[in-house]
Amino acid sequence: MPKTSEKTFYGYFKENMDALGLPAPASLFGTLTAAVSSIGAMSNYVKTFGTSVTIREMIVALPGGR
Image 1 (cartoon, rainbow, N blue to C red):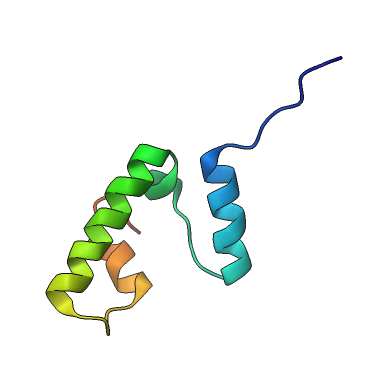
Image 2: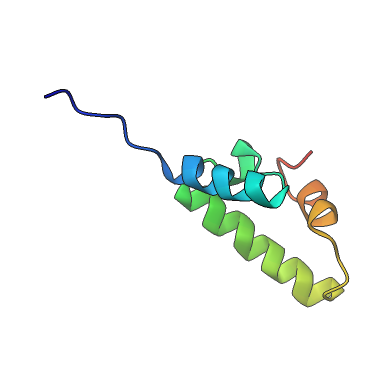
């Protein structure tokens, strides 16, 4: 029986972000390591600038963001 391809972390992450209407750039979330690093940076950004910062503002400010 042939092995079916398994969905990657990014595949599941992007699917969920798409369902929320949010971006999931592969440069920031393509691997588990990149995602953990990006989310950590976002967390620090919120600590610095407060909870009124938007996801878009954070993604644009992160290295590799749009």
